[in-house]
Amino acid sequence: MALPRKLRSAPAISRREILASGCALAASMLAPPVLAQTRYPSRPVRLVVPFPAGTSPDVIARLWGERFAKSTGQPLVVENKPGAGTIIAAQAVAGAAADGHTLFWTVNNTFSINPFVYRSLPYKLDDFVPVTRILSVPFVLVVSAESKVRSLGDLVREAKARPGAMTYASPGNGTSPHVVMARLLNTAGLSMTHVPYKEAYITDVIAQRIDAAFDASTTVIGQLKGGKVRALGISSATRVEALKDVPPIGETFPGFVGESWHGVFAPRGTPEGIVSTIVEHSQRIVEAPDFRATLAGYGLVPAGGTSAAFRQFLAEDARGWSQVVKDNQITLD
Image (tube, rainbow, N blue to C red; front, side):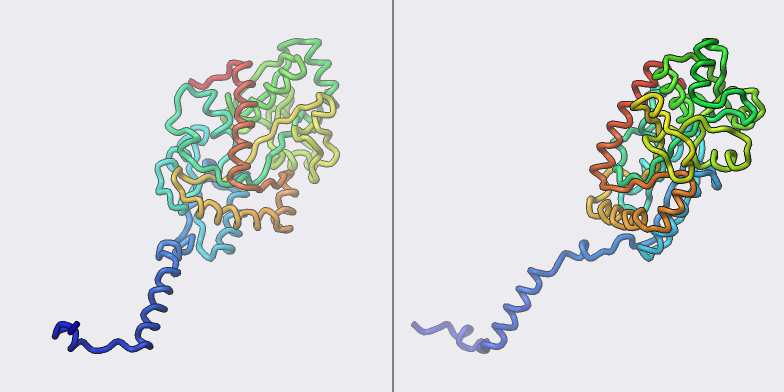
């Protein structure tokens, strides 16, 4: 059969051209999408911290942030948004773009205590992706260095002899030091009177205007070295490097643990690939000997781990603290 004139006049395609065309097609099929080639982070990262500059969480967040910036090659800017028990900062991050360039560095109050002491909150855990837990923060039970109470046993005996007469301080209702003490009193079957403060409260413990208080290891270490307070016990399951002489409260009351933590969160909807990248960078930071040594010097315990592990930890942590809040009828509304 004769070919139509137009087809007969078309130029012949060579074998070389056919092969070249096939190779180009194959290459285009194998090439990853342009989106997948975008490197994270592609611009500076904002790390929102719900505490003032210079506080313990801020100091540790900046140490981590410096290393994160060096690891990723992009600057990390810490933005302090203190106030309302971490609520202001949490609300700000919950509404941020879910692209990994806004992260939230916070402590246990935000998700393990606030949801149970407030009737309503402008955020919920589902508004975030738990990225990774950085560390745990033990609390140290202290009295004045001049106090006649020289051990946890002494405190227990004194409190049992005078129910409700002894006092303990905290930086406010529903704060971690308050809830940790409530847990200890429940465990030991004791009754003491809570005195909430808005400002520093350890000075009144030192002056013996208050009988006892829990404070974070990061701030207690300096007071202990200065001879201002006496440590009766620590809330961690085991002894910590910087406070080797302070026995865990669990040695007196088996199973007792009461710690805070620092962790990184991202807005809901942040792609899994970006979350995994943040975890990878953070894990290298947490495993670095110099970073671990710095944490140890503050009495902090490195954690690390995956997003899934952090999510599971949060569920267990919230379950434990919610029971303490309920048993002691702690509210802020």
